[in-house]
Amino acid sequence: MPLPPLPASGDEPDGGRRVRLLSYNIRSLRDDRRALVRVIRACEPDLICLQESPRYWRPGGQAAWLARRTGTVILAGGGRIAAGPLLLGRPGVRVTETRDRLLPKTRGLHARGFATAVVRLGGAAPLVVTSCHLSLDPEERYRQFGLLPGQLSPGELGVIAGDFNEHPDDAGWRRLAADFQDAHATAPWGGSWTSVPENPYQRIDAVFASPGIEVLACGVPHGLPGVAPADLLAATDHLPVLAVLRVPPAQG
Image (cartoon, rainbow, N blue to C red; front, top):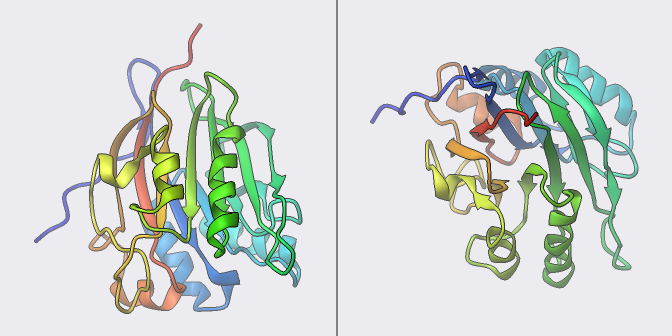
């Protein structure tokens, strides 16, 4: 069955903006980098929320390499504070503030953080974008879910995307979904399962949008023109999640 057409990004007559946002765990660029670049380019994202960007060997240089190859620029994250998450965006995306955050750490577990930027696209309202990769430990992960809404100030519009290491019926996911729209559940498009590429059986990667943002479509881009199945298998150990969101016009 052919994939339904995906709305294009772009400005709308009222000043709002349709935005394509891609969330992708890239496993520290340890797999086929060329396949990864082809997948990202084919999705034509305005914003990219990455997880597991390289952290230990030339992290800045490797993030810059990926930005150059995908025709994007670095918006936030990628350093010690964000601890893995990285935000990229098309040239022309304006960053008005960054809010990267290193999270409280449980002894013996990996350091985790959030990469967050407040961005402006065209005449649309400011958008707070956060990329996250949550803990494998259930108790620590639940606490991290509780910290995510704090990346937004009251009244702000925002998107939280990442590898949540949890399923939609688990406590932390339900905690976030009580206040944010689970984009794939709201406007399903493409595939649902994000792990593992060879035999997808679970949805642990997602995009969440705050009230006030209209979710037009969201899912794994199987069948999207230019996204080759072989590239999805070779690029990394997760499948990407692509969302199209309508951000309302700025007020005043």
